[in-house]
Length: 132
Image (cartoon, rainbow, N blue to C red; front, side, top):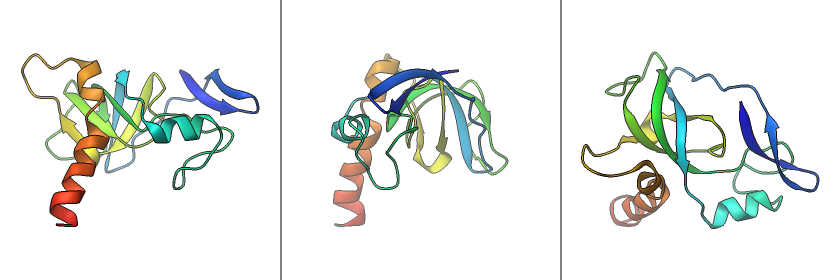
């Protein structure tokens, strides 16, 4: 599959292996990916937590259609339209923990619209619920 990978001279489009989901992960055919400040840093070769450096696939949030689910995944199935946060979103396929995956509302929300939400929603949740 094709992916946007951090190389020696910036981001390059490369052929990479398609990821496989772990027991608590979903594999998603990416239809859209968001762009945020952390993505810009990773693309420039900086670290963001444990992500970054040469060989890193850029992208923290994405939306698409579920292709495969791990054995421990609940309430998400192949064919579901989802939005996710994680890593390696700028690729044809990406994996995410099912706890960081939400179904796209069954209304007129598009994949590009949904791809902008995962990190923002998680930030708001953590500010209000986790940190009160």
